Image (cartoon, rainbow, N blue to C red):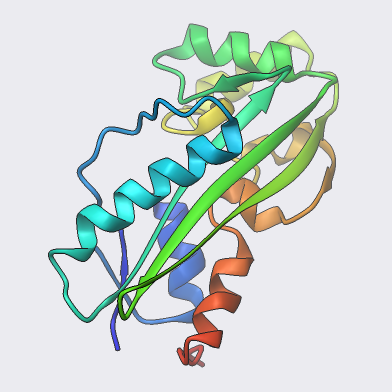
Length: 186
């Protein structure tokens, strides 16, 4: 049995690859959805990713996910530039936000999917620290302009829920794969 990760995310590759032998085949779909609800939207996008890759690998197990940062009812996507990243991080400073990941696993024609939600509270981020973080470039290609597993860990006051969800792939996905008969590697 082969697991295909339908994502180019190095963070998802690292999490899933820690437990299983995987192949990576990024889904070539637009990460948009007409669904309004954030939880349903992330699930819809994850499902589209999984379905787009499943036709190319019959018999393989496909794993796809989509992560969103939600603050005051608005989705904070991946910033296009440093100024957008700065605005996002200033908004999150001292506040609680949600990280939502929809995931979809396709295994033997069966679809297993779900949504994980984690709350994250940021400390107040001073201008000097913010500018230092922006200069690292770590904000690039990250929803909400931060990676909790990197330098931005110093912004986090607390989290409520799955840490790996904030990184980009809920640990629940690993558990689901073990239920399907995949054995974690040593």
